[in-house]
Length: 204
Image 1 (cartoon, helix red, strand yellow):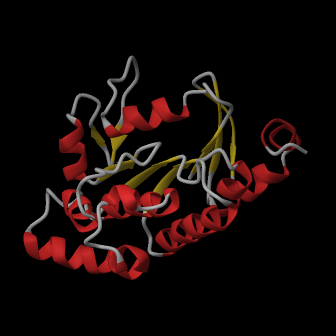
Image 2 (image 1 turned 180 degrees about the vertical axis):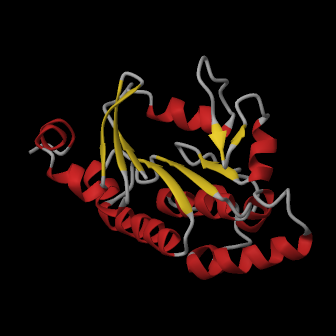
């Protein structure tokens, strides 16, 4: 699912409320039939709600591998080892540089690391907040290729990205948010053809 909207529409706030990083000011957060509105963020992670934050927020002095293992703090060592190999299979550059400090990675590689760290928790719902922000076009393509691979592996994803065209093109469902309210929704490719969306978010 892709969530698009102008700056200040509430996209990041919504993701933070779903993950439990920010308390809800109203309404409820239901996950697989359970009301998790009052649940702490770490307990939501244990239920499978995992967020990749805007700006990546890796632990720069720690090694790449240590950053990844931090994502599996709810898992056993054996599960952590298994997930680590899956992440390395998806992002080979992280395996090549696994002993290096995370702060030495490029912006695109840090985004891969942030996504890999989230995957270590075996998410049932992956919240991606602006994964392509500030990246060169080639790296943007790599990040969206990774998102497609996760989708095909049946990972449920809620994607927020300034690149509305790319986000909607791979989304099964798309939602347009304006000042905290959903004003349009539909299949991702259908919203790409919507005149209102094209004018407001695609620059057409």
